[in-house]
Length: 468
Ligand code: NAD
Figure (cartoon, rainbow, N blue to C red):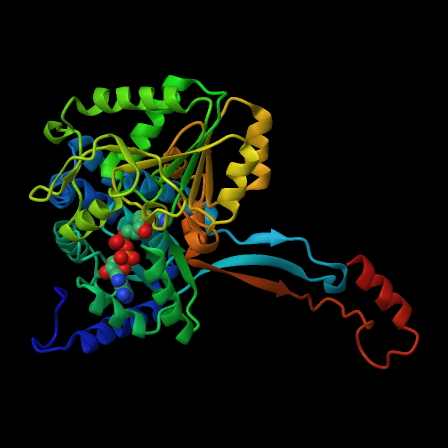
C-alpha cells in the first residue's frame, strides 16, 4: 500500500480506518455540498489528466502493450468531466413533483444529496478510465472517495496514485494501492456506496461484504457477451466491426463480442470476410503489428492457452509466452459444452457457433446468464424487433460493436449476473446521489379530514384515496 502518512509503522487497517475517518469528518463539514467546490475538484481533475497525459499513456502501454491510439482511449473520461461541468447546475436542481390529493395543499420535490464516503474499485483492462469515470460521478454528486486501482496493472496504479494524491486533499479523494488483501481490508469497513468494476466472482465477494453494513453497491461486471449474425447483413461492414470489437486491446474488453452465433447460411462468407479484416488490420503476422496488444500477465496467458484446446482453429492460434502474445484467433467446431463456452474469454479468441433458426439462437442466449452486451447484426427490422423483445442484456448494440459504451447520454451497465446499476453522464451522478423525497406543508390552513373524530368523513377519504 503506497498511501502512507502519519506514523511510519501504521498498519494497513489503521491507515484505512484513519483515511475513512478523515473523509467522514471532512464530509460532515458540508463543503462538498457546495457546487462551486465540486466544480473546482472537477477542473482540478481535468487539469491533472492534461498535465500527466504522457505518463498515463506510457503506463497503460507498459501494462498492456497498447498501441498509441488504444492507449488514448484511457483519456475518454475527460469528455465525461466536461459533460459533468456543463451539466452539474441542472443535475443538482431539486425536481418538483406533483403532490397527490391526500397531500394537498403541500408541495413535493426530490432533492439529490451526496451519499458520503464512497469506495471505487477498478479492474486492470482499462485501468485509468474505469477508475476516473466513476470518480467524476462521485465528485459531481458531492462525495468523498477512496480509490483502489487494480494491482495487476501496476504501472497505471502508480500513475493514478501519483496524480490523485498530488491533485486532491486526501480528505476529499485518495488512492490506496494494494492487492486482494487491501481490497478485502477496505471492504471490511463501512462506506456509503461501493462502486466495483470487475469479474462476477469478485462482484459476489464485494456484495457479501457490503451486505454486512447494508452498503449500496454498483457492480459493473462481465460475462459472456454474444454476437448474433443474421443472413440479412452488409457482410463487409459486419465482419470489420466484429473484428475490431473483438481484437481491440487483444480481446480484453468487458463488452467484446465473446462468441459468434451465426446464421448457417452466411457462416462461410463471414469467416472469409473476417479473415481478410484480421490480415488487413494486423498484417500477415500480427506479432509484428504495432497495432496489436498483449495479454496482461502469465496467469491470463495460460488460462487462454487452455481455451485454445477445443475446436478447429481457422486463423491464428500462435502464441509466445515470453511476450504474452496470442494471435487474433477464430475457432470453429465448438460446442456449448466446451470449456471456452463455460467462462468469459477475455482474450483474442473468437469461437463460432451456428444456428438455423433465430428462435433457437434466442433460446440459447436466454438459457444463460443475462449478458452485459448483446450484439445483433441484421438489416431486417422484424428480426431486430424480435431481439429487442425476446432477449435481455445490460446493453444492446445493433449492427456495430462496443460503441454503446462511449456516451454521456446512454447509461451503461449490466443486468442480472452482469451487474447492478448503470453509469456515465447523469447516470453516474445518480449512482452517487440519494434522491431525498421532500414534502413541505403550509401553515395557512389545515384540512380537518384526517383528524378524529372520523364520523361522516369516511366517504370523502375513500374518494380521495381512490383518485390520489
Ligand atoms: P477482478 O474482479 O479480478 O478484479 C477487480 C478488482 O477487484 C481489482 O482491483 C482487484 O484487486 C479486486 N479483487 C480481486 N480479487 C478480490 C477479492 N477476492 N476480494 C476483494 N477484491 C478483489 O477483475 P479484473 O480481472 O481486474 O477485470 C476483469 C473483469 O472485469 C472481467 O470479468 C470484465 O468483464 C470485468 N469488467 C467489467 C467492466 C464493466 O464496465 N462492466 C469493465 C471492465 C472489466
